[in-house]
Length: 280
Length: 337
Image 1 (tube, rainbow over the protein chains, first blue to last red):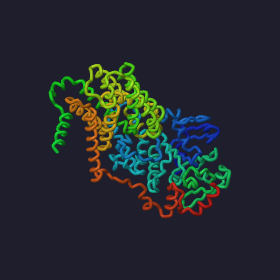
Image 2 (cartoon, rainbow over the protein chains, first blue to last red):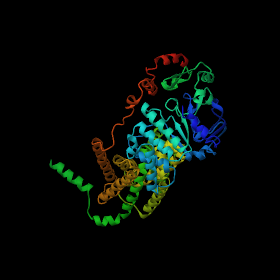
Image 3 (cartoon, rainbow over the protein chains, first blue to last red):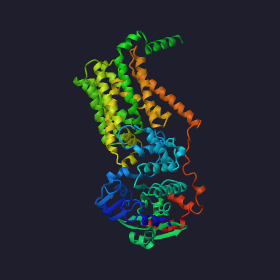
């Protein structure tokens, strides 16, 4: 957590990359969250935490312009999220590709470079150079020509980061980007995201159910629960009294060995996996 | 033994006929051109069909194309127009309801027998020349008029130009729909556009290879190409090459005889696939591919700090199995109920 204060201090006064004002999201009469006012500064690292069903992923979909707010306003890079989508990096949860997908590692990254343009690629050499550069940045040069269907989860996530960086994004949105990776690769990918933030000065919004792999880089936390939320630094939010108030029941935040565990969350865990019971 | 030999000779004699070949070639130039154009369309569209996992839909569209063609036959309308209407309509229905393979499959399963049944109804009501009847199902003996060729070339051009226009976004949306959508691409719109192109391609193919055998042109060449390479550009080139070999080769072999061209086309296409599959198997065995088994999750215990492993393992495990977290989890249970 030592490095966390540097970024926000340095970027004070700059226009926010993401701005939510009195934002609310509801499906039918179920309110996921409301009254959310939040500015994400350039270079800031925001972690979005909460159990399944609290609207974490919907929060991301709002920022991508795939879901309209039920209340309030949202802007990304000073404009509508949909219009800003091209300049936003998106790192999805790791999912395997079918084994025969006709894409190599470099093609996946190339889709981030010019996959949204109409027509066929007229300057393959230029794209090739850009892709090589991006592959080198995430340390994926070694398997640049391997079919994506044969890559491990960790390798795929490196490519996803390279793909996200292709747009020179002002903000990278990560959607459970570490889920289904082993511990080693969680660390590697988390470091990579952090490194690229340092390097390019982009903001990061990281949606996750487990804050531990990224906790040392996080500037602020948006904790969603119970139709409500808390925003603040990890030390301000991840506290027994704060979360107990948020959940309306006794919650205990335990710290052991640098890890943070939240115990006693009254979540609806029946439809999720074990990790949801803990932060962990 | 002797009778068998005679049968074999007559079999070969009727399958491979090359009498007056030069003259026939001149007469049937139209068919060759039609085949070449279809090969190009089939090879290109086929790669996207494979990427989007739409093989079953192609078959369903073909049956509805058949229904449309037979309806036109019965009404005395233009057969090509009827087949086009049937397949584009079917493709649109599929495009608007189930976009990816999984949701779409049951719909195709519902539409396909309906289309085939309709077609059979119309055929049995039709009292014209019966040779027209089955050519729609199994392909025709080569005969393409100039008018037919012109309409085919025009429709193919429409397909090819549109396909080139949407090439990159369509590839993106087909291989990686989630990220394509996040990037602001009109994934749904692209799916509908592609289904229309697919409908037109199917209708074109039905005229030559028949409704039942369209897959040999729209699936097999692309599948064979994907056995050999994972580079998108090479996949497209190989797919077109294979489709051309099957179509033009099939027509050249079928010219002299009175057997429909479809068995030639399907056989060449299948043989190409068989060879490509064998090449892939050999390659995978000799591990010229980087690796055959991804080492998912193998390295965690080696690199992680010893105290952290049990917790992480439990967290990464989808089943709430016993991990190193016993005290916490038991304390946690009452609250979760």
